[in-house]
Image 1: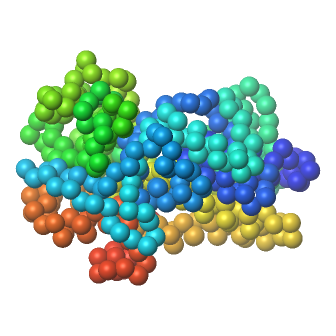
Image 2 (image 1 turned 180 degrees about the horizontal axis):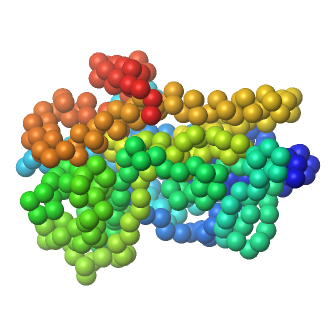
Image 3 (image 1 turned 90 degrees about the vertical axis):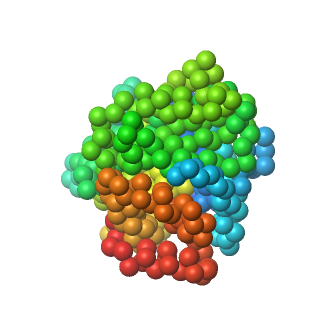
Length: 418
């Protein structure tokens, strides 16, 4: 088998998975003039487990792609409401040059479809209902030259992008397994008919109790704006309780403790409780090997500080597209193309490595008994400290901003890359 040329291939690049990472990658590749085949195993619209809340970092990515966030269905929010230690207060999103000063809420029922449609408008070819089962390898070089599908088809390309999520078959097919020294989380959520549906703030609860045990994680209430609220919780594997808890039962108990007027009862539940894994801090590496590029959850790009994944899925997709576009220029030799692609993992480490390491230290710390309780009791009463924490946990800083920006940027720079 030989590496396909542009005329032999079904596409210049095959992107597997039309979630935010895959669609963003396809969008930027197609806009750069490359022939892109975007393969999605489901058909739109489709459900996806998520909190549905978007920080200004994610909003920026949508605006960059030309998504009309003023259209019906997008619900704006002003910031974050923090509940814990007997306190409740609101933190507005910081005013920054790099990011907008508002967040959004939109369910994944059609969010992913909207982003995928923008990729199609840019020129990508979307095929739905195509389940990719593994990579096709060149006999001599061992490079990925295409993919196989459940229905027996084979699609060939010059390069393949794995945007197929935490359980990525492509990465596993290339021998790329999860790193055990990286944090993992789990999130469970459901929807309730509730008067909380039109809240101006994303609400997060920093104290998540299982009986007398304070767990390393948080709960959330995000108003969807359609009469329902997304209610869920996220837990980290840095606790000895991880894996020994029935998360659905825990969510039900947590909801029962809420004020009755909020309506978080089983009779008001509009969807089943569903869960998903949260791969964090680059838990699968390298992000490029032998013709395969990892983006989004496939490469474990979720922020360990707050469990945010959509912003980093779309950002890594844009970064990958920039590198791939340079690598596949017509005037490049195969050797130069490979050298260019091999820079991608370092580009990601330069962008996020130090910050993700800080996040790893953070989740290790709050996994220790007493640390989370101490931080909640002594940190929440100080608004200035909490505004700093909002910037740190949300990765929302300007390159040349105020003192808090400079501290966070400096810490991210000096921390060892993830």
